[in-house]
Length: 298
Image (cartoon, rainbow, N blue to C red; front, side, top):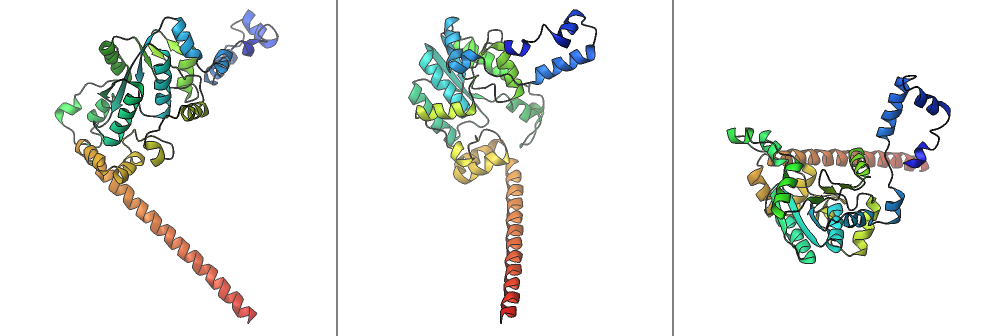
């Protein structure tokens, strides 16, 4: 940002500029520190939440594809794009197809925004199949071609004949996303990517969803504000407890997850047993102290 270079014409910085080789180690360290420092939103984006959208429209972008994950950020992105772009397409990447709790929420979004959300396999499934993650391997699964997110985007561009893919990534999410969004200014023509809420904060997203009365998926009441998107214990246990039919569907594709759940439940039982034992000993100690005190009083 301009403000960070306001003293570039004086002091040691000026000497370095006149003689680039005077202190290369210092220059390298300074550049490294600058690259790792999170950038803040530009003044225009702070003043206008729709800064990226308006900039996109000024560039003639009228059609976008929204990557819908079911999380808060992607839903906010879908809502904004549906209101400000002429044509909006959407796709959802699944780990296991036709899970009821996901399909109900996707149907809600389709009704609300009058569009059809394409269901496509998640790109990371290729790596999971190759690594035999939670499933028995086969010769075919071990030789499957590994895909990346960009491959899914390319397929969606061909399907919808639209160049730009809008995602709910934000500059506050991580250093990597910060660098991507800051460098592109919210829109990357070469990558065909647009970040409509790229300059928003987590609080901004929550406030916007509440103001628009957008229903959140069931994930958020089951995982303390998280999303049941990954095949890990924290996601699978709530599914097993609240959506048993979906849990059965998951086991058909990833049967070894059952062992993870059994191990987790065993550890939880042992933890509760130890907690109960500790509480019993504590209460026993308290009672003994009371008995000794009552004996002295008498």
